[in-house]
Image (cartoon, rainbow, N blue to C red; front, side, top):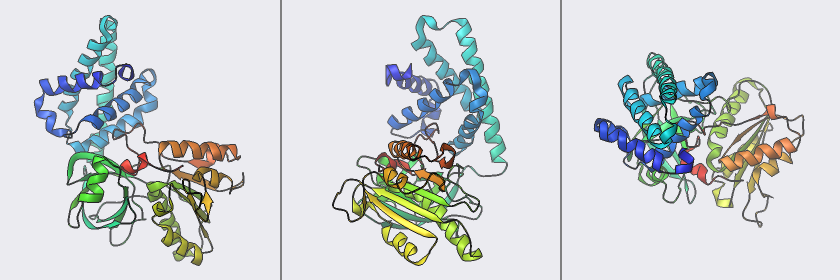
Amino acid sequence: MAAALGDEVPLYFYSHLFAFHPEVRDMFPVAMGAQRDKLFTALGHIISHADRIGEVEGFIGQLGRDHRRFSVAPEHYSMVGASFLATLKKFLGDAWTDEVAGSWSEAYGLIAKVMVVAAEDSSDTTPPWWEGEVLSVDRRSLDVAVIEVRMPEGFTYDPGQSAAVELPALPRTWRYLSPANAPRADSVVQFHVQLIPGGLFSTAAVRKTQPGDTFRVGAPIGDQLTVDGQRDLLLIAGGTGLAPLSAVLDGVATRWRETGRGPYVDLFHGARVPWNLYDQARFAELAATEPWFAFHPVVSDDPSFPGLTGYVGTAAAAHVSTAGPLALVCGSGPMVRHTVDELIAAGIPRSDIRYEDYSGVEDNSSPTGEDQLEGSR
């Protein structure tokens, strides 16, 4: 229904919500365009499983935990629920019967309960966010910045995870970013952000963030890009999808230094043009000194590049055998889909390919933020 009617459904929903409960308007971003898409992507994901709600209970619980950073209280769920049902009634028309109304009311009540309980349980162990201090903003290329943030005690994560971030220049707007380094003793975390023309978040992050600013960072999520074991790794990144895989590599390097053993790693980093290989020098140096690591930069839009050219997924698939390592993939949606298809076509078992799917997450952004709208294939 929402897809067929375009903006009409979310516009009516938010108009109804803010008209009857104007006190909640300040909980939402000033620019509501992206927010409308996020909400109905999440609702659509839940609605598509309405007859088997148990399959998405974990997803619903994550929504509840995520909403803690917006200071959502139990009574807000009733406000949203009333406007949601009013929206369904308007657009379903004659199909909105007493039976349908009862079914949707029951379903929403269950969803709200799962979200509230998950939020309450989470509040027993973690704050809704941590506040970190920006130490530096390093413009590594034309459009990529590496932002260093010192996080407070108590903020922990596994390499490969992501966390929602709010910037002081863009309050109430959260985007998922991935730490690009393994946890360090000095609690400094690096985030990679690519500047997208017209992107509110990436513009605020790359051009308006200054040392001394405060980053709010939510609880880390995700487990598909985390590793624990000795299995060799194939890391395939498009654009700033490099960030979580860089953190994984950082963790592997620490393991080799401390124990003298660990996985062998091949890293493929794809970009459209050579100057977007923004961490090439560091990886090339590591590959020159560490026998367990190999680095393969890939450029898709410059045939004169003196190295691998074309799509990064194609280059990686041509490199490995069917009995190869565990493959971790991160980048834009198209890049990930293409890479997975290429690996499977090359004979890599689907069970040996892992990537995070944040398409249903409330934020509806990739784990590295707006930068992944560009990505690389």
